[in-house]
Image 1 (cartoon, rainbow, N blue to C red):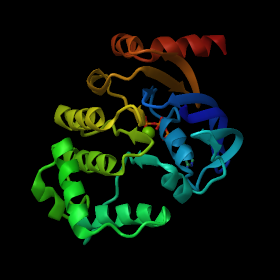
Image 2: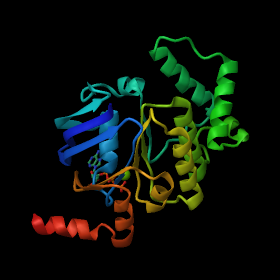
Image 3: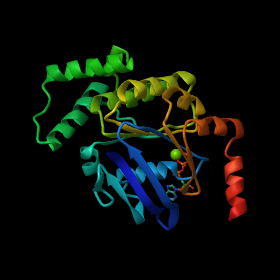
Length: 254
Ligand SMILES: Nc1ncnc2c1ncn2[C@@H]1O[C@H](COP(=O)(O)OP(=O)(O)OP(=O)(O)O)[C@@H](O)[C@H]1O
Ligand SMILES: [Mg+2]
């Protein structure tokens, strides 16, 4: 079964057309990488899949687990099992990591008609997730994202992923300020959490991270379209040659 199917997606923000016919399918248990130069539309695609209210779908459809969610509100998508880690996470002063995680978890449970998770079960679940993702214990009593280093924000992201076990995870990785350790946190976390039931779409400029997570499919976006697709070998080609050879070919053909 396919987790995510994007068909001929056209998206605009205000009067600016950003996505101009994107087709992309992520199957169950597959890891896909989305690459492409700055401003090509990668984050916009991720936001459109999550149902960002500032974006307008002018054509095409988004299917999640076979259901058309093009018009569904963001809450509903999240409830269905879509998860996104943001490129620029916000900090929430005064809310600890533990409190935040519990609030999120209970919101999901409530949406499924379940009771709030008992404190003991919550502690056990978080402890297991922390162990799995190598997050230190003291982390849980800190305030959410307040003064977090780039690497710590990544830990938070992965911890949430481990707790929520979404059907489809979209990870939009910022390209600034992350050292190799932070990349490793993300990569190890994805490898630990991903499995036959979770599809992953990872957006990154870093070839390095893609050597660590090993996507089965690689897509390159340019000017709001997917212009190249391939397997892991495409990562090496981009590493060696940059995006120039792709964009020049396309600009010539245009
Ligand atoms: N709300 C908006 N209003 C106007 N233009 C926008 C809006 N959101 C995105 N854009 C524009 O759409 C284009 C694509 O942006 P997007 O953030 O999707 O690129 P990206 O591929 O994620 O880039 P990066 O690699 O730098 O993260 C950019 O030119 C951006 O300025
Ligand atoms: Mg982006």
